[in-house]
Length: 263
Image (tube, rainbow, N blue to C red):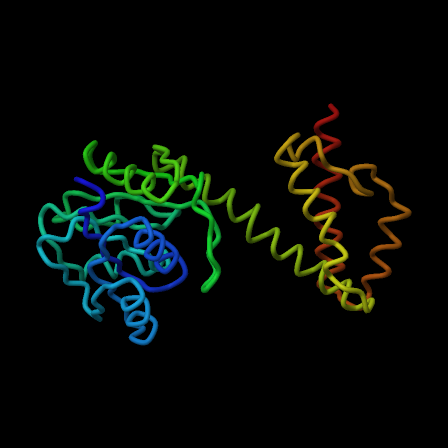
């Protein structure tokens, strides 16, 4: 397939679909159709990307690639109602699912998983972004790889188990981290302080973890098993039993982990 002559369509008009669709359009690819139950969001994305909108996942025979970018628990149901040409490549973006979700009649199938967090209306930098790809055949793998590279991404071949592990790791480093940041914001807010005061610390924490490794970058009272400081913190958090419990559980996990590492 010549990339600039490709017709790429989408099922979904949410955060992932929007980011990918707009970037493909900027790269010169033709966007054929946006299928979405959200008529307002789907129509707007279709208009912005020069595509058609439809509520039904029925694609013309000449559609080259269909990207299914919907919540993981909706993928199987969406695929079961889709219709496309025999040669159409159909790929989903779900990190927790593999090729097993595709109906038997779909012959050219794949996983097209971008390892990134997406927010509606926020532009994502695709340069160097890893795309983890699994495919039903070598030709499908090559075409999905070229599709990721067309927008500046890097393609990696992962099997089902590896991708699921990576997805679980992503939950820890992104979703769980965001929850910890939310907890930090609650504490600074309780003290009447601006959350952005933690900005330099947050950035240095991430930079150091990437440069040296998180396992050797850990500091603080938990790794020292500094019970005096730990007890003071727990007392300070008395305004929120939920945060007290979280603090104690994570502290004990850190202390136990590093004690085990010393043996």
